[in-house]
Image 1: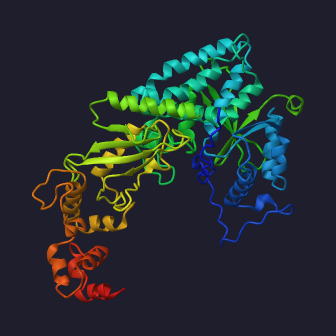
Image 2: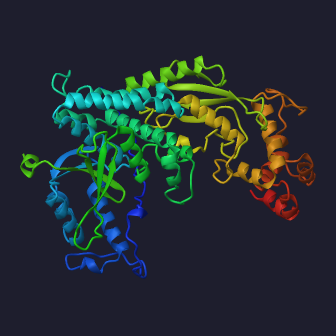
Image 3: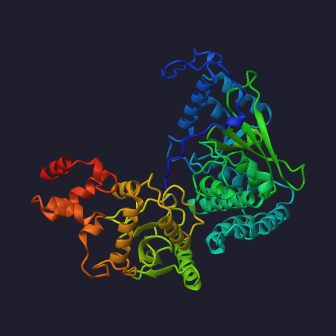
Length: 319
Length: 221
C-alpha cells in the first residue's frame, strides 16, 4: 500500500465557542502589547481575553508546531499536559481536577480541524472494545450505522461516493471481538487511525453522517444553524456544505449533538479554559445511547482543539 | 490509496455514462483515468446558452480527499473564469471541497456558476469590472464569446461561427465607434483595443474617461 500524503492544510484559526464563555464585563487591556506571562504572573490578574490567548498559545505549541505529530497518538499520562501549562495555575488546577476525577491519560490528536471527528471515532471503537461483550456491541453499532446510512442518500449524496468511506469504518468494527477475523487490538486500532487513508476516510464518513442527521431533522437543528463567523442564520444545506462536509472544518455544539445522535453514543466534553477560580472543569454531555447508563466517551476541549481523555489507571498508562 | 482513487474515478465515469439526464459528459484525454475532459452545454437563459463547454480535469493523487483540479478548455467570458487561462474561482475547488463531491456534481456546479457570476470574488478582474459597469454590454460580449469559441448559434453576429473570422472589437467587449474614434487619431487598432479594454471603456465610463486620458494611455510605451 502506498502511503499518499494527505493535504497538510493549516487548521483554520481557532474559534471561541461563545456559548461556553461566562458573561464578562471585565475591561479589556488597553493597547496591543503582547502578553508576557512567566512564573511571577498572577493569573487571577489576567483578563478572560488574556487567559484565552495564553491557552491558545500553549495549545499551538503543543499540537501544531510538531508537524510530525501523528494523526492520533498513544495515551500519555495527563501530567504531560500539566507540564505544558507550567506557570499557568488556572489551567494546572483544572488538569489536577481532571486527574482526581479519574482522567489519568490523554490521547492527543493532530490539530487539523478534523480532531473532533477523529477523536470521537477512535474513542467510540475503543469503548466498544472495552465492553464485556465487544462482538455483540460491535454488531449493535453496525446495525445502528446500517439503519442511519440510507439518510445519506436521502440528502442527495451519491452512494458510490461514500460507500468506500463507510466500508473503512465497517472494516474496523467487523474486527472487534474475539473470534473476529484479524481481531482488532488496541495497537492495531491505533495504527489504523494513524494511517491517513483509513483515518481520513472514517473522518469523512462521520462528517457525512453528521450532515445527514442535521439535514434530516430540521426541528432539532434548524434553529441553531448560524454562520460561525458572521452569526447569520443559514439553511441546513448551506451550513452543512460549508461547515460539516469539507474536511478541516471544526465541529461545534450542533455537529457534536448530531453525530452523537447518529451514532447513538454518549459523549462528554471537558472544557479546559482556565475560567473557574477553583479549578473545576465543566463537562458538556451529549447523551444519545440506547442504554442511558452506557459509559460515555470523554473528550478534552481547548478552544479550537479536541483530544481524548482516558480513565485507565496511571500504572496501566505508564506501562 | 491509489487503488481506492482508481476505483472511485471508474465509478464516477460509469455513473456519468449511465446518467443521460444531466447531459454531463466525461471522457479520457490520454488513456489515463486521472486526466479527463468534461463537457456540458451552456445554461439556458444565459449568454452561454447553446455553447458547448469543455473542461480539463486532473485527478490529484489523494483524490477524493483533495479537490479535483478543473479549468476551462473552451474560452469563457465570465468574472470567475480567467479569460486567458481558463482558471476557475469556485469555493468547492478549494477549501469548500468535500470528498463526497463528484466529477459530475462539480461540473454541474460549474454550469451553475455560469448562471450566477460572483463579481465580488473574481478570477478575471477586467471581466468583473465589465460586468459591474454595464451588464448589457457584458452579456453581449459573453454571448459573442459563446458564439465565437463555444459554437453557440450565430444570432447574426458577423464572423461569429466557430472557426470563422472573429471580430476583435466584439471579443474585447468594446464598441466599434469608440475604436474607430481613436484609430482615426492615428493609433494602431490593436493598441486602441488593448487600451480601451484595460480602461474598461464601457457604459457610463465612456463619459467619465476623458479623451485626453485615453490618448495619454495610448502614448505610453
